[in-house]
Image (tube, rainbow, N blue to C red; front, side, top):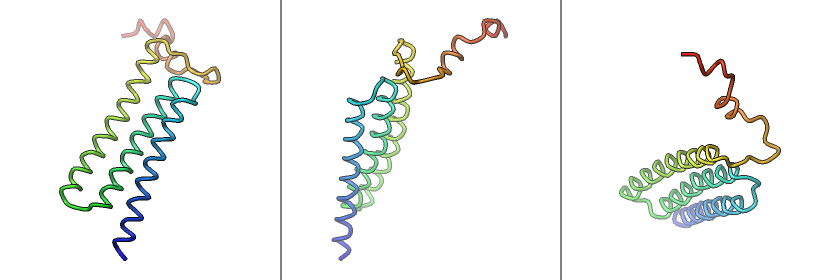
Length: 121
């Protein structure tokens, strides 16, 4: 009985993780601009891969797999969030235009703000 529940829960987590990654891939194609695409893929990578790893841990629960899984999940969450931020910042600094409905541009206000403010020490 416990093996059946473990198999169902593990497989369900694998399916949900794969669906989240698939939705990120669809978002990469369908979303309107670079920034929303970068956000979609970073969020999908972080959550989707974490669910895949947890699903595998449920299916094969050993101490060695738990340690590897925790390290992999922490590494994935850290690198996907930092990578998404770095991609968005690089896109902004190279002039990638946001969607026309994105207002206001707070980064432009901070970067090119008041000219008198740049002379302050």
